[in-house]
Image (cartoon, rainbow, N blue to C red; front, side, top):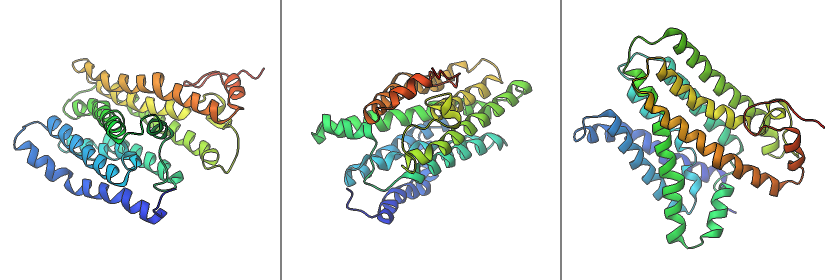
Length: 288
């Protein structure tokens, strides 16, 4: 149990992000005096602010302080990338995605007594702080920070390109809106179960056709960024690395790990698995 009340936890969580918001663009200006590249400057700022949050988490002995970073940082660096493009729609979608993610997180967040079950398991496996904290920093903070940079990297090239295929561009926008909507609906439907207002497995709405429709919407969002860039041509097709890496993370780590966690947590989950055959893409149920 945390020694901090909810209001104290909220201050400890949010004040570092307020500091990051104040310092983001001054840091950018300082770095660009040495590196004349807004890509390099934003990558460095991301790593500096990630290290700052790590140190705050280390001080309070709580890793959850970093949790909302990848739902905050894009609002800064995507805005900076877009400042001369005149594009309003894409930054708006990024802001909406980030705000939605943070709303979902804080809707159930109980305070600093919360840490992700995976972190708890690693802490039990590696109780030595000299081993535990480097694993957290590199594997659960630096790597995700790099992923959000590369996941949004297609937008940098969108902001610096002209004359897209209008049909493909409009499709990518609709695709991204659908992705955010799917995740929003899935999170809304899951909330009563996650907050323990309802017991058992969430078997309503989108969850009747996919065991992880929120992850499906999340991955769609990142593919939407890439599709948007493709509407300008294939010159920067290599930026697929971001969406592909995030898809691989969910497909080979997040979903299998969550499945194992839920099987240990609830005996009924095995029955739910047999009914809802797809763990990702919504698909037909198997009632018998």
